[in-house]
Length: 75
Image (cartoon, rainbow, N blue to C red; front, side, top):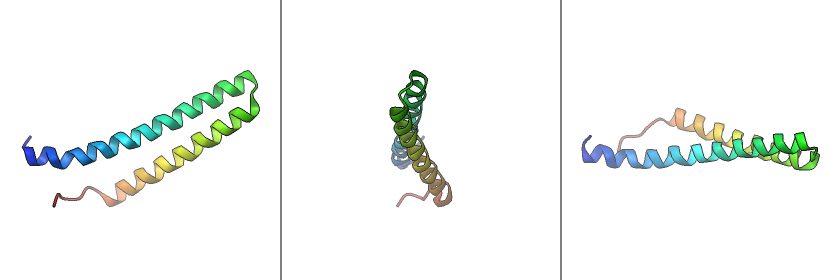
């Protein structure tokens, strides 16, 4: 891989890492919500489920925007 192509790919790799990090947070809150629901903590389960849902929606919106925008050529 040429050095120029590697430099062009680095911002894309950082963007993918941030999006996957957001998805992992959504999944973490989902697991917390499920455990809290099993243990009978209704308020904690509801709050964690709401946060997980909100983060997942943000992740989907960012993913769709990146699909529509596509990859731009380096300057």
